[in-house]
Amino acid sequence: MTNPVPTHETVLVSQAAQARKSRGAKAYFSGLAAEDQVAATYERANMPVVLRRWRGKGGEIDLIARDGSAFVFVEVKQSRTHDRAATHLRPAQLRRLWASAEEFLALTPRGSLSEVRFDLALVDGQGKIEIIRNIFQ
Image 1 (cartoon, rainbow, N blue to C red):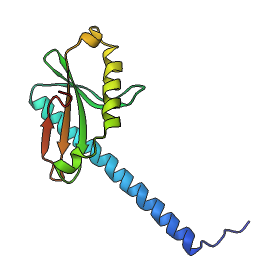
Image 2 (cartoon, rainbow, N blue to C red; image 1 turned 30 degrees about the horizontal axis):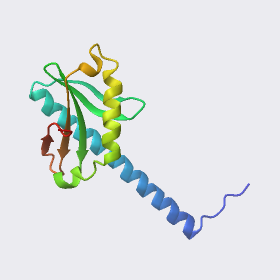
Image 3 (cartoon, one colour; image 1 turned 45 degrees about the vertical axis):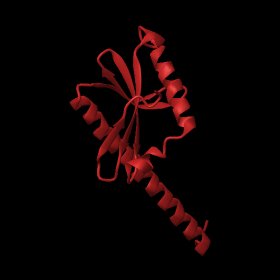
Image 4 (spheres, rainbow, N blue to C red; image 1 turned 120 degrees about the vertical axis):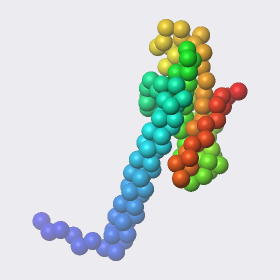
């Protein structure tokens, strides 16, 4: 069996696929680093992070922290600027975040009677963090 000689088009497609894969890996690891930074910020503010990347049927919650008796559900968005990071949060994602939080709360002793807060943590290209508390309020 002979190996076919790659055509110019095959090489270009392969290079494009590799570039996409590389960008995806970079975004994934940048997201993890942003979540680490935000988790440390909550910890320093005496709000321990109890779960990271909790996944339910409806989706994933980046961080779940405690602020006293309240659960804080944190969505982390990272981009070059805080404004640009904020644009990455879409209405469908907010609905999934809410549904995932409801699913999580159903597993807790107080359920939907638990005190909760939803925060949005924005991380810019310099690593600066802006936390917007109570995004549903």
